[in-house]
Length: 167
Length: 167
Image (cartoon, rainbow over all chains, first blue to last red; front, side, top):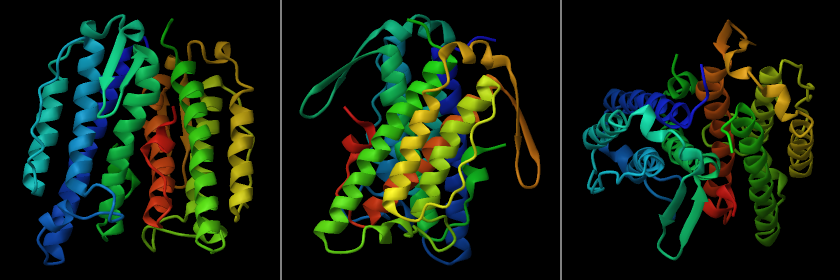
């Protein structure tokens, strides 16, 4: 067994995206049990100037697919961020899982030293592959996944850490 | 440059714990600016049955120090979880940073295949080192760090993603 860039991206994101599906399914089931439209959850926020749940899920998806693609030196598919319902968000996560499975372990070989450029609105951030993984891809991915989880938890959905982590 | 267990624990935790200090300092400054006791933040929660901010910080600390210690095959120091003020929590994070710096890169060599046993209240979880890192140490660490961040953000503290990620 070796520790590889692939193990720390593909395998980590795959497991956590799978748990995001579990967490979202619990959100939908809980809304139905409490007799409100599950899609209300998709537009809920932790603060008025924070992104809503739907955007948190889209960003979790983006950090998974874009990170692994940049490390592989390919262009990730652009997803249009049009999802507004829980069903559409579940489909987005499944599409992300399908995409990351198209990247092979060999495509990430040597990616720890690859030059990564991230175009942001106001600047371009540059990294070598390893610090990009350590200090950008992983923290950003969990930033949005955990916020999505916290949004449901704050709204009374009965999710717990085992749903977040998985078995 | 090689990707190592040390790079994915020590370096990741060190950067993020340093940003946790930045986020907490902003919380304290914001409370002072809004004329309330900063320690109110320490007992704030996102849901009545979730851990308060203080416990989220303690657990962020625990997942950093315990994860790196287990991978190194040593016992982490036990911190008593008595912190209730922001100053005490800042000290806890600094103590954690000091501790993880005592673990050398060589202590984690080969740790990807080490047997890791985690005693929980109701069961013992067993992993090899790499899946422990991928599916336990990193997700748990960010689970509590991001929740602490979200708690402050939800309470109107002017933190943003740049504070979370760092430069």
